Amino acid sequence: MTATPAQTGTGKFTWRFVTPLLIGPVLNPINTSMIAVALVPISHDLHVTTAVVVWLVAGLYLASAIAQPTMGKLADVFGPKRVYLVGLVVVLVAGILPNIWHDFSAVLISRILIGIGTSAAYPSAMSLIRDQSARLDRQTPPALLSGLSIASQTVAAIGPVLGGLLITGFGWQSIFLVNIPLAAVALVTTIIWVPSDTTRPLRTGPKPTLRDIDPIGIVLFGGALASLLVFLLDLRIDTLWLVGVTVVLVAALVWWSLRSTHPFVDIRMLRRNGALSRTYLRMLLIYFGAYTMMYGFSQWVQGSAGYSADQAGFIQLPTAVLAALTSVAVARNRRLRLPLVLSGAIPFLGGLLIVFLTHASPLWMLLLVAAFFGVPQGLASVSNQQALFRQAPGDQLGTASGLSRTAVYLGSILSSAAIGLAFPHAPTDAGLHGLGITIAVVVGAAAVLALIDPALRSRKSADSERVGDGLQAE
Image 1 (tube, one colour):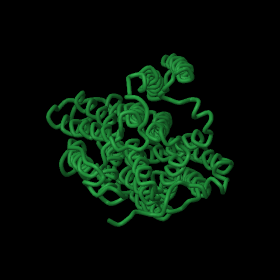
Image 2 (tube, one colour):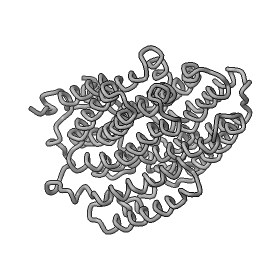
Image 3 (cartoon, rainbow, N blue to C red):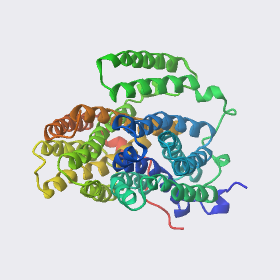
Image 4 (cartoon, rainbow, N blue to C red):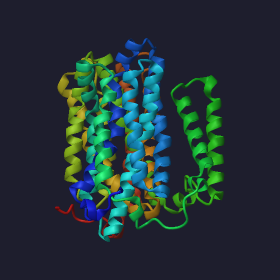
């Protein structure tokens, strides 16, 4: 029997409605970050090379980048609760697989399934929140939106620390087992406490069909991302042909999307909605810097500065703490321009500081540099999410949310290529300095874009924000 608001007490934004929506979205960032300290143990245990084991990172990035907007589209068409539940079941299966099938192929399949399953959480949660707001005819609490950001970016920051502790105590398989209790709790609480899709106020029109999902658009989008990813992770002259493949597929995607009745990537909407398109671009640039810092700095700390995997994870703790505190501090802020400018300006300074680090630098300098990337993560996560919620069309919020995460993963894919170029054989001081300059240039561009964005400079857009003042007590 399907739960209804009256039966579950979710006729308002209560802790029952919020709890499952906070658990699901953390599954993706925690899995993308914990793997950073697990690659070496997996490589040694399963006897695969570094070049092979890196596909555990690339596989999840690729699956997530494709699945995020796909799940968002499915949530818009078939209902976010259904899609959310299916995704959680996939994560449960993925968490079990490497523990019963001890082979690298099983681990890779598990990572791909995790990327697909966890990708359902964020766009579905955003659609469920928008539906609840419309259902209640009230504004969405900023604390709820910021809660999604706080939960996701905090676990992403502490993921390397948690992963290191789990691997030391229980082996690398334990980072996959983490998914089982989290997904199970989210699954049960969603079934019990989240209103049925049949009560969606925004659900109109005929019964969804395959044409509404736009499978051709999904294939073109996925093919373009896959060819780009393979090229970026293996930069060689004899792979340049993949650039041509990517260009052709992108051109075909644009051509198809402009002619499709229900396009997977709504080019017309993005062209009309410049504010939303610029939000995607800012997210790509900011998270390029964040992922480059997370993976590049961590590798250098271990490979050049001589710290262990556990110690390298703990060095990133200032980032996690400051990101969480900043998210809480700006949770109720209705203005977007200043936080988004600072989210690029502060890591710009951090990137410049990286240039002064060497393998002999004292610990306090490493902690200081890491701290420069905590505050901007909190600012960017909350403010970009509020910008997305404000700028996306209501009936396409799931798709728009999925595309925002794809922008984030494109940033991570580009950061992987940058790290590979900086550290072709092993982490070095010179390579780290190159990454620092690259980070400064990219996030500096994001700060300038936020500064000159007319949508962010408008007081009217801020004053007309569609979010309200807080969670109701039950």
